[in-house]
View: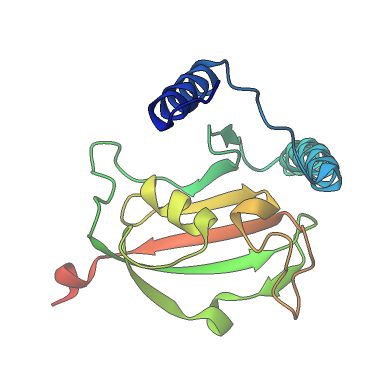
Length: 184
């Protein structure tokens, strides 16, 4: 008995419907080595995060001149000079002026204020180290604040190629100067 063209078409459609309605089978990773690398990388990063957190706490404890506060962003800060609490912190787009110094956690100066100079920065509008960006958000004009930053908020896994090592937590002393508009 010969099957007609219509019958073949009907069978093909039936098979196609049956196949497309079946439960899909999840795909597995083709490159298991990559998944292993990502797991190892996550483990190393968690270990580094915990280690740096302990280093920051130890540096804060050793620095008995200041009382350090911790932040959700993962850094510590202490006021060297605090101004009137009623003053506002800077808003997005506001140009802030500041000078700062970078030290290691043993207070050895890596870059002094004179070398780094005065910086003008439009808050959240320009590129800047994440630590500096976060620190400036909480500072009022005239304040001097000491920050202890983990490496991921500074120069991270690259360092700066000169004085700052790979994955090195740092101590920044930032002085927020008056805004540009106030100086005119």
